[in-house]
Length: 84
Image 1 (cartoon, rainbow, N blue to C red):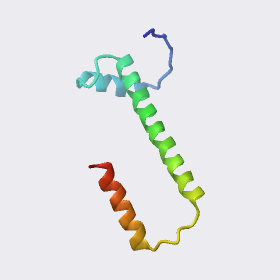
Image 2: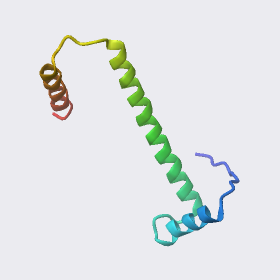
Image 3: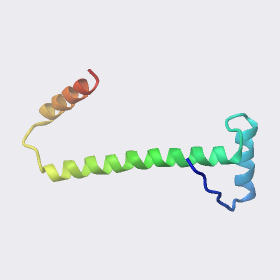
């Protein structure tokens, strides 16, 4: 995988924060820290996209004729099936 060099501007406080993360051993250098932040942001964005899709699916499905007990039972069954 090729790499691209980027220049970023940070506040002194942000620079100190990054250096602290490196000095406590969580990261070996600034690039590793920034890449970790980007990976975390990508994962969170994917979760947000999935959540928005699920919400839209629920809205598109319309109003249910089922009562709360029925809905709860269906949700529990889906959860059990997903973890079986």
